[in-house]
Image (cartoon, rainbow, N blue to C red):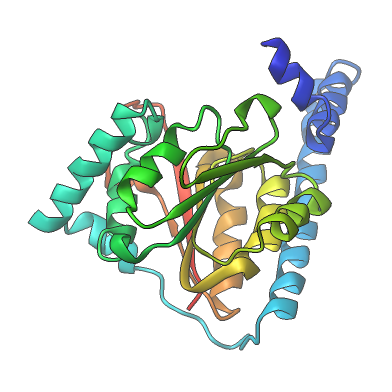
Amino acid sequence: MPQTEKKYLSTSKHYLSQKFWRLLRHLIPLQFWNLLYSFRQRLLLNKLKKQLFASLINSKNINTNKVISNSNFKNSIININETLLIEINKLNNLFNSYESDKAILHNYNYLYATLFYESKNNIEEVMEVGTYKGASLKSWKAYFPKANIYGIDIDPDTVFEEERIKTMIADQNSLKSLNTVNLTWKQKYDIIIDDGWHQPEASVYTMIAFIPELKTNGIYVLEDIDQSKYRLFYEELTIIFNKSGYYAEYIDLPKLVPATNSGYNYGVLVIVNI
């Protein structure tokens, strides 16, 4: 692991917790550790669901009897028309030109063309969590001609600024850190993309902090959900959002558009502030 990764990973509560569990793994029998870890994960996931639901109640008037059918985006990805195909190829070229893996590895150009091509000229504020070298931020800047692009990451080495792009340091495992982002930028966003830690605790904290900052009809996308571990959890979150005045859809993208890497099996959660 590069020294810069050690520098910022060691400050994360999530990382320290995982370090403890990896140590414990070597101190107790494997079978007992598996049971203990599974129990711990279930407690954590239930706690996170309750936290998120409480946050949604506080941020929006909800109707808990309202359930919205989630099929629109999947159908659009499956039934590609000629116009959409042009946008898919355009995003593919953009992502590749800036050396982002969103198209070449994940086929997210199919998803994002479906979500954004009709409104791209009206998008004004976009935020992405997990900036790395800024490849996707620069791709969004090129794709959305009128948009200001914001990025956050825990790694200090990722911070940069250029015309229409701002970035800052933030820790997804800290609501205080994420709320500092809101206080600093004071923005409402058309699009928020979480391409950060890819762990439930970090993902839920990020939702709690930033989903209230979505504009009406704003779209929130959580990328790279490990379906072997967390699919059920995020499908349950989808139900919570659909009962809370949002439109949410869990998408098994590799099933719709086979990934370049046959071993890739990650889902996506899309949430719309309707």
